[in-house]
Image (tube, rainbow over the protein chains, first blue to last red):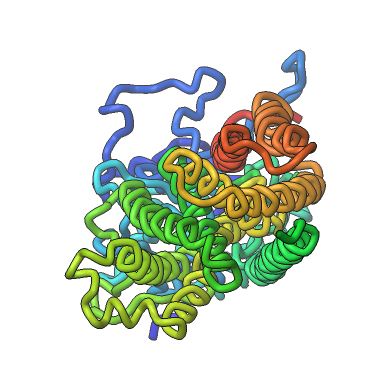
Length: 269
Length: 311
């Protein structure tokens, strides 16, 4: 049994070249959007905009500039499925299309998915969407086919700055912690890891080194499992069903009593 | 900021709005018909039969709407059977999985109840007088079908809200009251649908229709209370509803769908059938708009932080 594998993404060395996006598209034969016509966002150099069924890698451009643009910085982050240790998508998939692999990654089996889209609503990171080519839900597979052949995923292989690093999670965490210490020593005290420990979702098999609040990168501060609401919602609904039954029975009893009263009040002939 | 704002929309739109609406009516109609069946006088029988027919049609429509909404509709059976192994597919912790089975079983009980009702209504039709069908009409089996069908009916009306809550989407996952809200609304719209059909087809005596209207009034009061608490529990997420959606919620759902029916039903009873039908139409409109607002307002929100952010 191989040990858990994943990605460590050091956002401080990402240069926004999008080699990862291209490598992912190429290896996974993902179609271009809008029939191949370029579509500009109009307010950013980021024209991919979000992860979806045909964009399994997305380099986020976070542009932080003052009003007069005298001060500013670019934050870049190559985003991808987090391959959560406790995966909301896998948990709620009603067809069993989403599986956990021997590498502890999360993969959607396209031949099983029927496109109910429950996983899209359940993913805390907005990673999954329908691929119009297959009409099934799709996302990063962490190059499951390449992993099975002993190869590195296409995106990390193509990354020219090693912003995306692939390997056993245990090793990646050690590397990431050392990098945070290094950045702190260099004065970048905002550097921190997101998802490297098990504080939420049991940990993320694709975790990040970031230098600002998670929300700035479009990451939820406390991502949660969708089933957290199952028990309270079910109990409240069950209580409601009992109240409705009671309302109905009380109404029927009242009607019966009213009819009896009307009969007894009616003049006898 | 709620963590639900960082998620993507599943694009559940009009098919699902319609399914939630029709499923609620079907479940509510069966529940009310079974109450009249088990505890009402013989004079209620026409309305009981109408309720069972409505539930069956609703269950069939629900299945069709759900299937059509899939992006791979030919794989609808993957909800019930594991496509690789042929074993049953059931996840007790997944509302959509439980819902698929719940709808199937509700459809079965609605079919049995409707078959028995049709047999009762058409004594001359020989296939309907077949011994197993007549057995269904006996008090024991009929009561079992009524009770089990009611349980699945109420489940069908309410699980849709629980399904939304068991996600990570804004509004849906930010409160635990959607299941209860949809359940009460399902019972209310079920009653309204029966009143409307009863008046239109001239089925059901004044006492039966008046009982339904009375039940509907109580359900509407309950729905209003749950709706107020629901919006309250959303906290800061409720700001999503500021704008057209909020207007539709206040004017359409609360105003036209709850307050106006409650106000114009005050006064002397029994009400004329046409009056009951008008009120029922408004209740149905409100129930439909409730699902429109809940589903589509959340569906409009896409991943935050996916582009430019400014400090």
